[in-house]
Length: 287
Length: 223
Image (cartoon, rainbow over all chains, first blue to last red; front, side, top):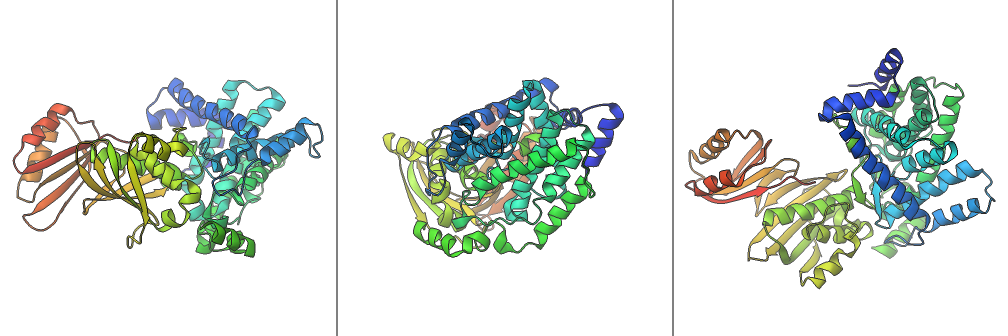
């Protein structure tokens, strides 16, 4: 089983970024030239950009009618300069809601790592891009860092709500986005590991309890909170705050917690928010 | 979950909301179309388990029809698939039923093709957009659509499997996975072979001329 720590050491020894280590690994794994890898990743980035733009301007409601239009509310307040939490944070909230809402409305997204958590990575990366004016090439690199960490999470634990609860989807996406944000902001390979560990630790134990089984409530809003946790974790790591528990051990803990989690709280809509009086009423109304 | 690659973690590019209930459903429809081997003009789609109970809110019905129309999971027209089907004069009816002890995200197609072919296909969406076809016309199979696949209806007699594998060996085609099942001894049997290489038309032509082979269907892998 691979460890993220091995990549951190390799990057440190060779003076590389995590993304460069991941790209080398994947050139061998997929038997593809570097250029081809970047071409495929560019397609993902393009769809991510389109999904943010489409979601921010959308007033559409989802198939069930439960979600839609919230990204525009947050974006409106941001544009009016009224945001309490500032440009950067309100930007990440609006973008994460935008993509997650678009997904619920049958728009086109990139699963990152899943459809239910598709808003976090584009929101964090495009918000950092806006704040720091980073180059497209660096954004693509950051996506490789995120996906590389995701591979380790999938290998050591899982990225499926049905298997590991929401911590495996939103938690993994937040960890991936935190690592990517650190690299994008000029942090060290070690700091990407700390940021990912801090983000994932903040999500441990989070259950998957979607109302009526739809990828809507609470999934859409958890994309926004997950994205903000990713930025908070990145800020700590960039400042030199370290995680006492190393990232690989945090991932293993997440996998174990997922196994211990009762089935009713793993995407079956038989517990948690889905079984509240309101959750039950919505389910009864819809089915 | 085993060792994957970066594009398993970032991707697929898909129309939401769910990789299993939407993207997987498109791929199940697309596989049913490939197995039918021609454009479907109508039929019945039976939803089981979670597909039956939460399918509506996930656009599963729309996605299954989109797949039958030949769309991929990232096609913007998926939400309009039933409308497009109606415009083309195609008619698919939905039912729900308990199909037994199978994966909760399962569907059974009974579809008719433009040239009169008819096939029954049972498949499941097993997570992250991955699918598996479990039954074709009541024969047990296991097709994931990740390799070029041969589905061969033949008579259950000694040597029939050997002549097929010999033909593939001669054409330098390697078999990745293989499964044989039969109705009963000596009766009709079904052979499913997943191969590393694409199988050319001339090899398929030779295979169709082999004795005791009734039908050969070559299925290209899904996108």
